[in-house]
Image (tube, rainbow, N blue to C red; front, side):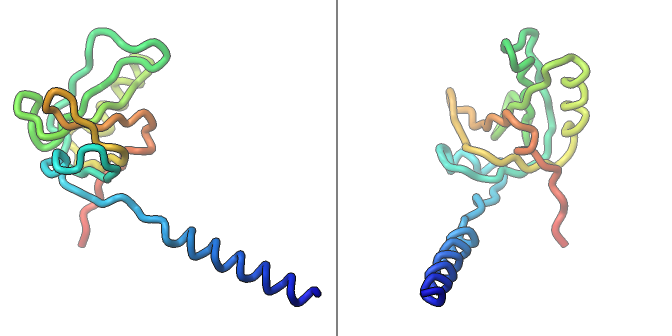
Length: 132
């Protein structure tokens, strides 16, 4: 009876391990290609070339800061939105990513022809490291 329990437990652990290892990571795409992946989860990478912070914020979230990648706002191909709840946090968020190559993970959305991603958690944003 004990051998049977061990075999059942081993098969369950093996099946769960296979399932855990089979989890797909989202595809990594360029900011200019994001418009072709609206509604999908992806890792979008590009260089932050412009930032915009509105005058007013959202209650409980602070001011949404828009980070435009590869092209400025007037001709933007993709942007992401992050939040800084206090003025000093807003400056820190902008300084952390402005002018740098970053990768943002999440679902790609589109409004009025503009492709973007909401990064409500800063863990969704990573500095892009060049591949060798």
